[in-house]
Image (tube, rainbow over all chains, first blue to last red; front, side, top):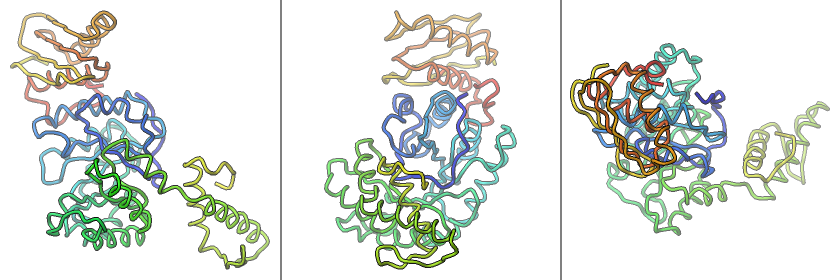
Length: 304
Length: 99
């Protein structure tokens, strides 16, 4: 078994790429694409009569493929199916970093999965609390309950919008300017930020529309998302590029963090950097910029 | 485990293998592989080891390999065997007989 480090609740997750757990050709070398997380799918990408086979594949992929620094998340089947409990068992037994709860609609859904995860951690003698959770919000009810879902468990590291079903329920379709999803995206970002966890936008499925994809990624970044779900490796590079901080932001963040450490050591709480007032409220943002810069290869310093 | 009825797992896609098990007396393995010369022996060993781990003693097994990794071969053999016993859907002994 390939040992994986303890999953980190807060880490860089700009790109999360979906791969069918049923396709050995896809899952064996998924880490080479350089996405931050891979999402091995037991749900919609796997035909109803192949759910069992996908779990066997998944178990052996999790225990024998070295995914290195790439985070490994598994999307399990919905709570209204006969599959999800065995999905949880195989995820925990195989040592997946986290589980994505499909079609999550309430805090109760999260707690139901959490109880099954804890039972599986006991059954397979894994560290209790190791397996992280995230929820996909795919219905108006899920979006409206976003905040209670985000707060439902200490294991929750993020929420994702899943656009396909949601657009149908909202009686809309993809629009160039994103107006179709504006209310949902806004609600999910607010909920995630209020709960202090991450949020991820839905997939962009028209691979021939590069312009539309790029516009959506830029809007995601401008709205405050942490990252995006992807369906094709060729979408990775652009997202990383857009989510990377600018040179100027990195230099500014470095100055702020350095000045803050010096000033607070000297007992000063509020001060100026380049004429702008800085206090402790700016530090988490600046540190986040540096972490992002480090992951993007733009910062090699030792402040982070 | 006892093979109760014929069962299949896997596909003929690249990097996959299609495994068929049927009731039989003793172990009989039929292997066709796109990488037979280089990996034939290794695949055979993996299949037989997996059957042994599952306690399968009587079985006709056919493997059509399309360049699958060891871990895929194991997954397909296990799934076919569990399917043949009607036990593939839940309470799989992950980390036990399946490892």
